[in-house]
Amino acid sequence: MASPWLPGHGAGSGRLARAHLRSQADVQWVEQVSPDAVLPGNTIHACIQASARQTPDKAAILHMVSANVADAPRTISYAELIAQIEQAANLFRGIAGEQRSAVSIILPMLPEALIAAWAGATAGIANPINPYLEVKQVAAIMNAAKSTVLVTTTRKFGPGVWDKLDELTALVPSLKRVLIVAADDAANDFTTQVATESAGLRFTPTDDPQAEAVYLPTGGTTAAPKLVRMTHRGQLLAAWIMGALADPSPDGVVGHAMPNFHVGGGVILSLRAILYGQTILTLTTDGFRNPGVVRNFWDIARHHRMTSVIATPATAAAILALPDTTSAGHCIKSFNCGGSTIPVELLRSFHARFGVWLRELWGMSEIHGAVSGHIDDGSEPVAGSVGRHLPWHPVKTIEVDGSNRFVRECAPGERGVLAIGGPGVTPGYVESTLDDEFFVKGMPGTLRWANTGDLGTVDEHGYIWLFGRSKDVIIRGGHNIDPRMIEEVLVCHPAVQVAAAIGRPDASKGEMPIAYVQLKEGTTTTPQALIALCRERVQERAAVPAEILIVSQIPMTAVGKINKPALRIDTLRRVARELAAELIGDAGRFDVVCDESGKRPKVVVTAALAAADAERIESAMKSAFGNYEFQTEIRVTVDA
Image 1 (cartoon, rainbow, N blue to C red):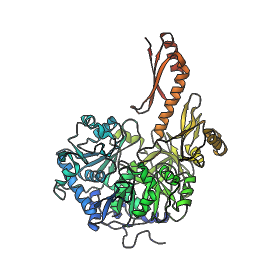
Image 2: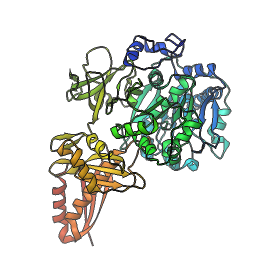
Image 3: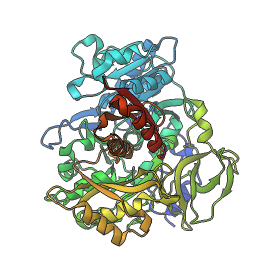
Image 4: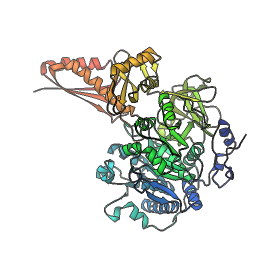
């Protein structure tokens, strides 16, 4: 059996080991060594410094200023990168004073976002934040992190929470300084202030691999997201594993189009590239949110010699939908997808047209990165599966009780809750009260095990199958429906680009399956035709959608996932509006809004009624809405 280690790059203390995983036997081979034996240092700073010593003049970051390959990218060498990280870390430490340095970063996909994050982790804590959250959500995150510095920008890079900077800073009492990327005045400009710092670190950074490095928000779009405590070792190990899966060669060029406030962009793309001494190719400040990047994808791949990339299935579908494009001449070795399941039709059509297999990943912020994936052994990936576990991180299907205590391990192929063990599991959340629902109690063995919240199974060959998060499962009268069985059928229609199935609240059944559909440009079909297709091909009769809505654009998250929470809120509003219209009729005026400030969205129906109708209709509304499972508030006023 051939070794997975690249010649001259085997595991050993104090150097980067390079392995290329081409079989499950390679995973087992790698697992024979300690995770610490594959990294050149204990911390993010030490590992970036090691790469900079190897190739100081090489391009660490190529930042595309536009989607046009004729426009020269901005280039930062490894020597420049490590120098700016160290200067920024000095600046952050000086601002914090006696407090622990905690650097919140609210930026688009600029090199400064990576520099600030790695400098923040060197000085203390880095806290990357989604620029498109509401001010109160961002303030809650910063207060949880006890931020001392904020690195952000202005509307020069488009709209974002930086538009309300005065309101935001007033809500964060621990904040001592705001630094602006591309500021109009030098006193507040991030780059100018970093340049004033002396070269080299003025302090001794931690050498503890288990020290906290990043507080990463996760967990949804409503209320304040949870903050995952990420360690130096956890991030570096996740970065190493991804490089071994995708491309461990030093000449790799990693397509970076996922935002840095997401584990995909910040760790398994960016940190992975720098750890391996490769080049990060940032596909403009907007990544795949830039239509030009999608439109010119293969031109960009050819011109910059891109060797690996990660995207969502929705982005891959958009690339496939382009009528006049060719992949000829590209050198992509790995095209991984994450965030949602790759439909079988997309998997095979993409390969048939472009000669590239889309290989699905599965991971989460709480594990610092990817946990499973499809190893490139030259064959077609097992469609519908998220692959097999990656080194040092076993995955089991288990049954737990109501207190998240281990009951038993499920048999191969039996459905249950997916749990992950291994050194990449987070030490916990910043809000420690959340740990109980995450860490499985009483799990046999010495590993710490995480309850992912995903329902699935591990088959007899070790392949992991997801059946959706518990919140994504559509429950129709006690019948559990996997939305994928609907989505897989719909995307087989030649006019459908993206499909998303969710549950619509129903008074008698709890939920009824419905689907939102986005069509390919220049094509047409009808909801009736799509429902007929589902009646013909969806395997379970109960899963045939009760309604299909064709929309111009299915909402996406900042990382390119289908935004199902937004679709659920849209459905809540529609159901509530239909019911209110039926009950109120011409008796008054009403409005329906969705309040997302709490842990669960709440529908608020406000009605202005004639005095003679107010009591009767208010009573009828409370009774009717009481038959539904979603939260509702009825507010009735009497028209003068």
